[in-house]
Amino acid sequence: MATKKKTAKRKLDKYDKAIAYLKKNPEMITSCWNIPNNGNSGGCLFQVCSPTGNILDDCFYPSQYGCPTQVASREKKAFTREITLEIRQDTRIPRWAHDITVKNLHVFAEWQRRLDKELNRK
Image (cartoon, rainbow, N blue to C red; front, top):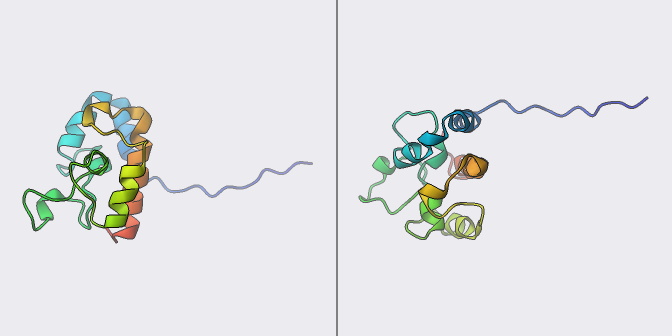
């Protein structure tokens, strides 16, 4: 008799919820990208690659740090040189906001989770 392998289910996080929201509202992707920290349901996917994730908290204005798209397109950088280089090498990240679709939102979630962990973001 075959037994089913048990897999631990991960609790849905804010990035899973953001993806679900934007899948239902794909017309909001650009708006969420433009204003990632306004409390909307999908903007967290496009937070700045810094310890706060918030462009307004950076001590330099305009910020030297950008979201994964801005880092990938070489317009801005991430908080560390290593993360900057890795984002720029990740060909899954669209280089322009208008190229972001529901099909690649998981890539943004993946990067935001990594940034949360590596930069000790809450």
